[in-house]
Length: 617
Image 1 (cartoon, helix red, strand yellow):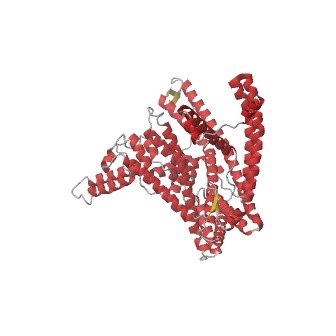
Image 2 (cartoon, rainbow, N blue to C red):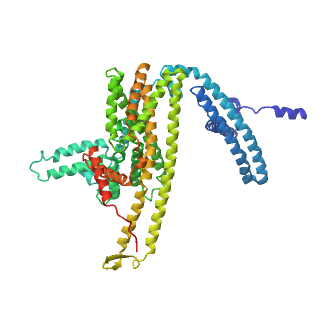
Image 3 (cartoon, rainbow, N blue to C red):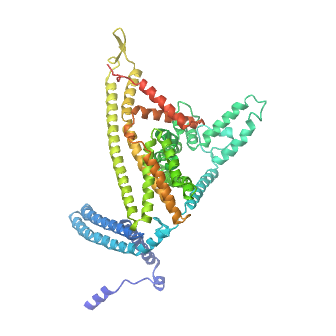
């Protein structure tokens, strides 16, 4: 009997062969097939959990292998500690005291197994990294760069990436156009007058509207219709309709709200171009070749597009039904933002390449090139934020060049590593500055909210009979509701104006980090471009260092965002809005015009500043 028992225990579970399967009944066969599928799902799930918990991607070299090992060990220890606490609690909830001890056993086992597993995976990653060190050294000498997604070394070409980005943008645009054209149902809009003027469908693509505009314009052009006294007006109305519908944001606002007018806040908001607004606000037009479109402007643009699209497409009745589509749209917006940032970095890299090309080709001496860069820097410094931009751009260009040249020319790349350490210290300081500015901005915001709430509460408590205004000769009369609300609004606005410098400080801290990161990536593209040999890349780095040095030394000392006056900030904001609206209407406004308008606005604000705040009596 004992032998039979041992025999049964040692017998492995039989594997289903083709012959065995043919002899099983259908119900048993289906059951066993489902068990195998469940086992496969468990294996796949376990593999995903393991890969998410431990870093098992191919490291590019020994340093990357050590970094991966550190992460795996850390994650193993943390996961083990969490399991030790969570498993007993989960067991107690499921099965009381018995479940608690069962969970405790499982938790203790996990607390031991997971850290050990992390150590094993870490040792494996270190070994892989050391094994790849030779390949990494060879690839570095050949000028290759590491692809973090594909985990391979490859030759990078700026022009190839530009072509790839343009191709993706064209495919995306073509896909949207095909999707819109394929929808034969007319899109429901509040007013279709502009569509009727162009004789197009409400689903018309930008290309279709452009063709329709040219076709209709030929029909109503004053030169083509000399006998029609209304031809000029018709032509003007047609142009206005095309201007609204050819802009994505204004078209979405028109579809939702109808014709824009001065009373329609949504329509006015749709005319705002964040890039124009922030260029005026920070005076960044002169340095756009070096920093591109500010990140804060790109984010504002995407948020406005997303807001307009949601307001246009989602009503309260179908908000829940469209929730998934909204989430998908946000993911698409994130991808769009990523592509836009890549295009921005490429544009900067190309601008830098064109600027330094005469020096790299030997057509201009270093002295003449330095002189030209200094002249440009002095012109930029004349702007309100010019020196602040020069300091940020100059430091980043110079440090990126120092790092690249140091890695290539110094013993064991010591000078390059020194430059990298300085760069990382600057990034850390920028992050701390953002944190500090964020805390101050949040504190100022809370203060403003409390004061506004106090003002509103006081207004609510004051009766119309108690609130009076002097009429002359010592007589008083009750204030109207409108007068009280106007005074409270003015008080709230004044409180908000007092916090403008703090808000601007935070905005610039974010901009400064964004500029540094963007220039860093643009320089990496410029220095890694396999379209030229290694000697030419070093010449590029030398040229970039000259540009950075010229910018940095010509930045005026003592100029900082922290010292900006609230009247100046308010004036810049007012002019930024006016300029944005003017450009949206097709007017040309130069940078000199905006600076002059800002000076006038500052003078007017100071002249009209109240000597004391009005109070309810």
